[in-house]
Image 1 (cartoon, rainbow, N blue to C red):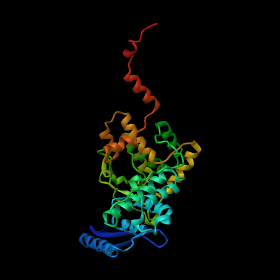
Image 2 (cartoon, rainbow, N blue to C red):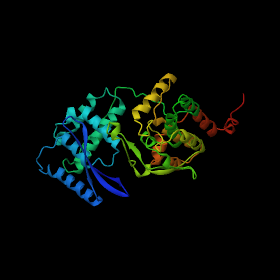
Image 3 (cartoon, helix red, strand yellow):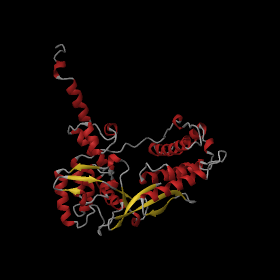
Image 4 (cartoon, helix red, strand yellow):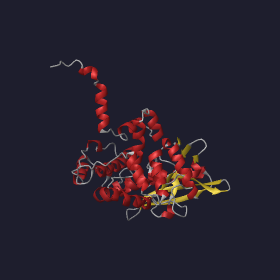
Length: 368
């Protein structure tokens, strides 16, 4: 459940409360109510939360896994981005609900959980991890709500029979420029790629960035919103605040990106940088399809998030301190920067060994 501040016009605002739930077909649906004041919106959200809890206040009542998931989605999922909740709902409906949905939450024991993961071991590791994360949300919420005293998910062995496909996570400058060169007739696609490569923006952030967010005089870019495309239909696309406080930031604008954007602005009359021909939101699937056709021809293993990986890796390789790289990447934890987003090339490994064991050490080797 979340409260959003919506501009009404003339400097006035409304407050919209969104309640998410699962319908009879297993699809996530949203119900919204709008109020003139934030206080009224907050009071409504409290009443709805209380009503959900009151409907299951009987200690002896059977609460199924499906009941708990719906309750978690309505009450405790606020800390997750909208796109993440769509992913959790997809994996819940496909993998968890058919097996455990009707089971009393108190009967979700170690054997039940381990059997579930054993049955799904033919899926990829990333899929298994998402199933586990979804279950953890359900079981943690049930424990916090007092429906169970503990759970054994941490004891589960998660194994995938599929060997993980190691995807390329770094795109060197030559290949990046080659990719951009194939879109000379579509500068909007180049703009999308540049925002990822030179700012490290996530897909949803790049699709929501506007020229009004850029201060060309002081060379800064304000990241304050991201696209929410969970509504499915393009007419339902909207912008929302980023999922974490650290994601909101003012970033420095490098000269290469600045030069491109100033030229691009001459042929792109809209405030939204990555837009369709009418200046409206560009569907992620539309622009991704354009790119996928080209990268297939080039034989590249490309995905947009690799540009973010590349951005941080380039910072580290250029000598940036980890804390500075983490701040520019807007990571709340520097460990994320170091453990996830930096790759080490074979030449860098060789260089590190050569520097550690200099020629002075070889001078002591006896000569034949």
